[in-house]
Image (cartoon, rainbow, N blue to C red; front, side, top):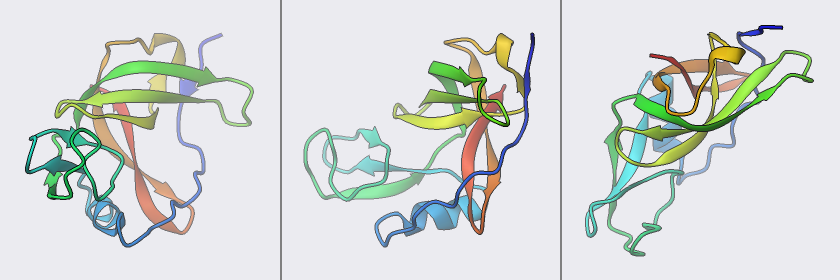
Length: 132
């Protein structure tokens, strides 16, 4: 049976001082990732120190919003079925997210996806992806 994945209610994220710029940008419809000034690597999730070299010289950069599905799982037993996925962004980092507005049986590893934002319960919108 084919399931078209739509939207489900998602809990609001915890906003900390370290992640506040990320969530403020999300409220504006922009996806930010951190980039290290020392080694040049982009990383996600938001944190102060670079996970590649340990430098604290990092800056927020706007991501393109384009990526590919690295891995995924269809959660069919949920009240509202959904797809949870790891998406590798064009900039390099891989982030855990949801795939929305898609036929769950058509989702594939390596599939191009594009950024979309989905509302959360009483919080900033969440970055999700849809087939490109």
